[in-house]
Length: 118
Image (cartoon, rainbow, N blue to C red):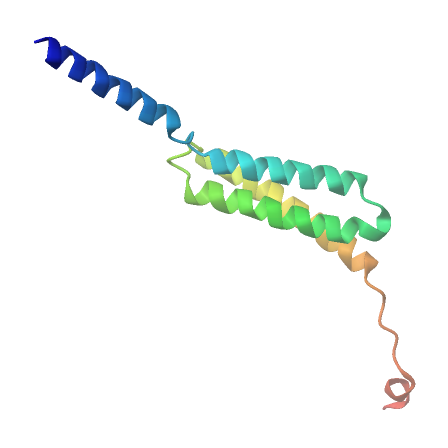
């Protein structure tokens, strides 16, 4: 009987230890959100000449968050409304990135042969 008790105690101890070592659910989502928040801060601190590149990094980071959240909606306990809000925020950011980067691109000037053509 004593041996059975120790065996049960040992099994419970191993189970508790295995559960403690398992990664928290959606740990990657937290990491991706932290990376997106850091990219957002870089956009706010960016000089005008680096703003487009900073927006591009934010776009990639934000898209990774939305994609991961969409793929792990149920396992991470994300509601459809929260996912829609993330996607809407991403679309707004994409529009800002597009506006900023299109203003920073040098305007193409027509060359002389192009001006002469009829």
